[in-house]
Amino acid sequence: MANLPQVVPNGVDGILPEVQDSQQPEVSSTIKVLPSNFYDSFLSTEAKERKPSPIRGLFPLEKTPGVISLLAGKPNTATFPFASLQFTTGHPSDPAQQVTLKVDDAVLAEGLQYAATDGITPFVAWLYGLQERQHGRKKGEGWRISVTSGSQDAIYKAVHALVNHEDPVLVEKPVYAGVIPIFESLHCEMVEVETDAQGIDAQSLRSILESWPSSKLKPKVLYTVPYGCNPTGMTAALDRRLEVIELSRQHDFIILEDDPYYYLYFGSAPRIPSYFTLEAQTGVAGRVLRFDSFSKILSAGIRIGFVTGPDKILAAIDSHTASANLQASSFTQSVVVTLLDAWGYDGFLAHTHTVSQFYRSKRDVFEAALRRHLDGLAEWVSPEAGMFFWFKLLLNDDTSVEGDSAHLIQTKAYENGVLALPGTVFLPNGASTAYVRASFSLLEEDEVNEALRRLRVVILKERGQA
Image 1 (cartoon, rainbow, N blue to C red):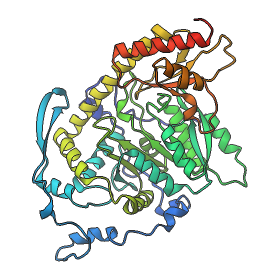
Image 2 (cartoon, rainbow, N blue to C red):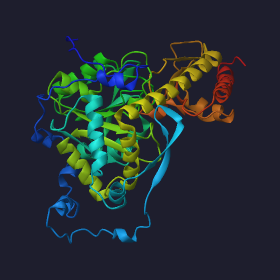
Image 3 (cartoon, one colour):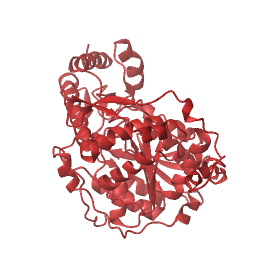
Image 4 (cartoon, rainbow, N blue to C red):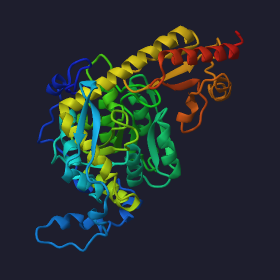
């Protein structure tokens, strides 16, 4: 492996958020970025053929001084029954301390009406500030933000913006089950890249790309979940991330950085910079499309996420939104930005630190129960982010035979009162595996112990030891 460049870690577990901010990565304002026409060959036929919205494309002109707009069929705000809105929330540093917040009248008015496709003005501005603080990237560096109905919405639209029917795509093995149907609907060839507890196996990725047939279209995208990966719980190591970025430059693909668990990192080592940060620190930027979500840190039901990346790809995503669902809920955005403005960036980071430590304690409870009930019957690596354990069932004494968890988990474990996911659902080729994914986010300690006790009984019966 070539010598890796020095990078700046962005935050240390256990340190107060304001101290974390002082260690945020710094990216030169003179970084090189890929030109807009670079992405012409990456956009899908669907994206190229989609016509811009004849109405939404003219929305900005309504703000021109002196213009009287007869443009949009917007309902008259006088008919809206919402006169004001306030809600109660916990203080970011002390959730037990209740604070009442009122949505500003102007923000509420924007939130109640049709709004810009990429998000309401104050929310988008807040998100730009967040990305600059957390990832060291500044406006004017060839990227922008668009608010979406959760990150899943953004991923779906990004895939359709970049991938044609039957295109090959690079995915982690195992991969987040939620993207498999997206690629399947396009009849894509999902090329599985090996992973381990340190993330993507760069040698596996390199081997795939260097041995790719010259007569066959090369993959244009690599999908990865680098923090607390769903399902494996792994967090990609720095050297692995740097190698992946280098390979993206050598073999010309875009990294789809799906990072809903970025703020759920609870490891003891400094938090590793994102792909979005690293590409700017190590060379020409513009090959990372980043997906963030508020589902895991504010509320899953608000359905607010956002995508960050090259302007030309974001324009294709926005065009899809304009024809599919017009915009993410501007009403929800007005509520969320009221909360975030009241907290400020330091308050937001204090809240996410509290959330990450909550899941760390949940992780510890689950792992203690694994040791108590499944020691010698399962193998696992302790996750440092997210909310999942990925463990291998030892279904027989012959370690050379992996076994298959599917039948045991889907039938016998369920019949004994335990519901989990067999690892095969995270493998695009549907291969058998002894692995199981279990979520530790909701259960109390007694429920965890009872669930794993029941699973132990099932495994022992399978091994003929009960």
